[in-house]
Image (cartoon, rainbow, N blue to C red; front, top):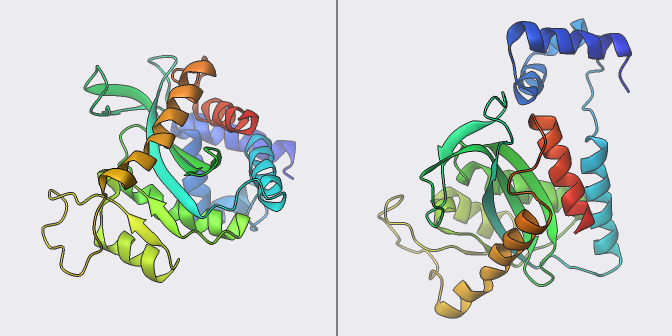
Amino acid sequence: MYAEASLLLLALLRTRWRLSYQEVHDWLCAWPALVLACGLPLRAAGAPPSELLFVLLVRAGVWMGLTRGRDLLIDSAPILAWRGADPDAAVGHAPADHRRPLLHGYRLHTLLCQGTGLPLLFRLSPANLHDAPFARPLLELVVRLLVLHPRVIRLDAGYWGLKLIAWIHIALGAEAVIPWNPKRQKQRDGLPPTWTAAESGKRTSIERFFGRVLIFFRLQRPPVFGWSAVETRVALTYAAV
């Protein structure tokens, strides 16, 4: 889609301004004059080929009836940076069950079908960002791309928020199964019940998924460097799954 001169100019600007790939993307989204100056079209660009391949495979699975996406799970897992000098990685808190308190790398936010144990969508972020802001964009995108109508959406306590719960119930017409986090919210009037023991057991499918993918596909610390390479590795791994 883009001329070689435009790509070269973007590479020079990224080096001169010391930006990550994600920061270049954010600047282009927020500054239309920069888009025109670089010779890029104002319309939105398509996804990278690896991500597009994954999305098309998921859509094919939906059309073939492999999954209906009625029961969804959202969670994240850490991805360690291959090198300490990775400019796009960041230092963030590790999960409670991890042996290290802090990790240098990324977080992989994943939307999973509970019935089949297959990934439907993902977002990559630096490790220092919180999980909660990624839930709604993932759900909005999967509804628009795959035309799904989820009935149940299961999240852990890190995604707790009244606005998110209300949006899931009202906009999606789904049930939000999320444990109450007293640190985030003290008022629970009118909220649905939180997880029972049976409901909590269903969430283990995404933990088993991360356990398989991160270890067997070497995604726990992929031998690649930089945002684009890590994101490509994730997309191709999920496509293979």
